[in-house]
Amino acid sequence: MTDNKRPTPDELRNAQSIARGSNAPELGVKNANTEGSTYRPDWVPEDAKKDDTFASHVMKGVKEMHDGLLSSSAHLAPSVRPVQRRKKLTVADYVRGIEQGDRVILSRAITLVESNNKEHFKLAQQVLQAILPRTGKALRIGITGVPGAGKSTFIEAFGNMLIEAGYKVAVLAVDPTSQVTKGSILGDKTRMETLTKHPDAYIRPSPAGGTLGGVARKSRETMLLCEAAGYDIILVETVGVGQSEVTVRSMVDFFMLIVLTGAGDELQGIKKGVMELADAIVVNKADGDNLKRALIARSDYDRMLHYIRPATEKWKTQAYTCSAVTKDGLDELWDVIQEFTEQGKENGVFLKRRQEQSLRWVRDMIDEHLHNLFFNNVVIQGRMGEVEAAVLDGEMSESQAVEELIGVFDKSIK
Image 1 (cartoon, rainbow, N blue to C red):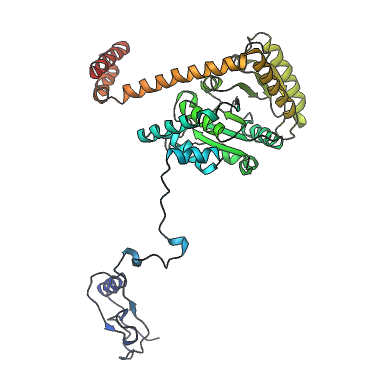
Image 2 (spheres, rainbow, N blue to C red):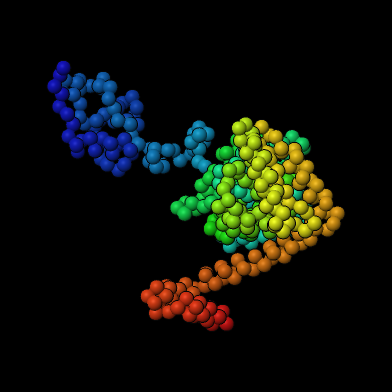
């Protein structure tokens, strides 16, 4: 092998600068065959010929754009073309897309509703007002249960059964919120694989966002958008912990509690609160070796329900068994829901509940507005740190702190 002289670092940097098309000095000799496009580098092997037969050349960079791209992108392949920004939709665009059942437009409308941007809020309210006449016709079903009870598996099996019966189903799965990314952490949509793929199903996982129970105004408005898009049944899955059940109860027509077998007496006190809200208690995973235990649990819950006031006037809450795997019991549960709906419409309870929900909605929105008005107040934000520090240092009681902040707020809005 020939012991060739290696280029110095400065020579390498100069050659790289030329390759990038920088303003560095042009090194070497121009190639006669490719005039103005390539350059022969200064450094060549010692035994290389001095003529133009040496094959190594440096390509001159393109200066019209960065990264060597030409000013015109018409020649580029589709995969590297500049990304086109999505068209900004008007209220009419949103309404037309929702009424036509366009899932992309529906998703964008829900994103608009979930946004905390003030401009988005105004636009979302205009869209909601326009689609309001098309809402209210869907059956709203709330589903809750402790983590591990099989809620997502149940919803997938139940939703597929409803679709086979000719219904369009929307699922609003309210996930717990990551404190780091503020996004959903359970990934309910990925656990409903077959239902997600069905054209008559729409699944929208939404992060709870730290609101009470993970469900608030945004979830209600999302439900209205799905109804306007033509979905006959709305399934609302809750986080399954805390006060979320109370909030969902105020949103839906029928509320069911998914439970497991083998829960000891020490847990019954915890369950009692949510059992008072349920229109049906469903013992899930009633299959295989667990079937016998599920039937026993169903009897236990029925006995307990005798001592609990029914959640819905003129309706007797009972326990049922089902299996999301074998599909046993799903038909019976749907019959129960239909009976509940028909009976409620006949005796006026169904309409009364819807009216109470509307009024509750108004009050909740007032609470949310006042909450935001207080904490977004510039004067409050400036005083809050001092008051909180005084509380922590023991210089001010909690009650005094509240009175102080409310007084500051009152003065700031007068």
